[in-house]
Image (tube, rainbow, N blue to C red; front, side, top):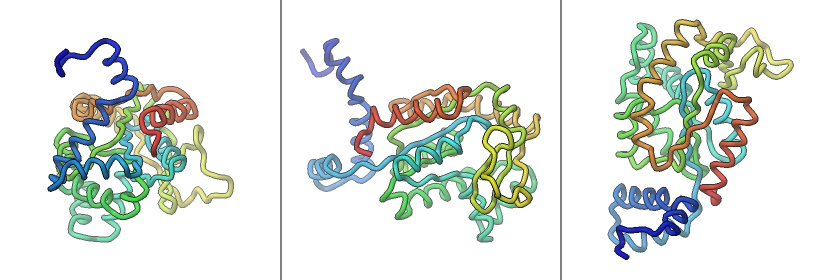
Amino acid sequence: MSTGELSAEAAAYFEEKHINSLLEELFHDVVMHLPDDPLQFLLHALDGKTTLRLLVLGPSGCGKRTQSRRIAQKYGAVVVNADDVFREEMSRKTEAGEKLASCMRDGLPIPSDIASELIIRRLQEEDTRSKGWVLNGFPQTRSQALRLQEAGISPLLFILLDVSSEVAVRRCDGRRYDPVTQNVYHMEFAPPPRGMPVERMSEDDGSLAAVASRWKYFDARKNELIECYEPVFVRIDGDRPVDVVSQEICEQVDARYVAV
C-alpha cells in the first residue's frame, strides 16, 4: 500500500487519535521556527508539556466570555479577551490606543493591523507562553487569522459557539460590563455576585439594532475563519444552557489534548 492510501482501519485510527491535527501543528511549528536540526526540534516539542491554546469565537451573545473564563480557570490558562486588550491599550494613551479610541468614537472598525499586533503582543507575554491561553473575540477576519499564523500563533482547538440571532438578542439585552473585574454580567441570566456595586457597571451595547448588526457581521465571515482553522475546528451549539456548553468544550479539550 502506498503512503498516500490509508486502509479503513488506519483512517479510523487517524480520526480517533486526531493525528491530522497533531501533524498540522508540528508542521506549522517547523515552518515558523525553521530550526537547524528539525529532528531534535520535533523531539523536544513532543517531549515538552503542551499548554492550552484555545480560540473561542462566535457572535455577540454566544457566551464566549463566560465560557473562556470557565475553561481558563479549569485548565490553569490565561483568558485573553480581545476587547479588554483594546481597552487597556486605550487607557495607556499610546499612539495605537489613541487610534483605537478615535475609531470607537466615530463608530469605525478597528484597523486590522493595529488589532492584530496588540493581540500578538499579548499572546507572546510570559504568562500566556508558560500557562497557555484562551483567546476570545479575535480574529474576526481571514486576514487577521493569517497574521496570527505568520507570527507563529496557532490554536490547538478552535471552538465556534453557534447561536441563533433570537438567542443572541435576548442574552445581550441586560448585559453589564464591570471595568474593575473586566467581567461581563447579565442581570437575569448571569447576575453579578451579591454585594457588588452595580452602579459602577456600564451597559453593554445591547440595542436590538447593534446586536443584530454584529450577528450578521460575524455570520457573514465565519466560514472564512472555519477554513483557516479547519483541522482544529469544532462547532458547538451555544443556544443551550451555560453548564451544558462548558461540559462539551471540556470534553473536546480532554479528548484531543490530554497533556494540557
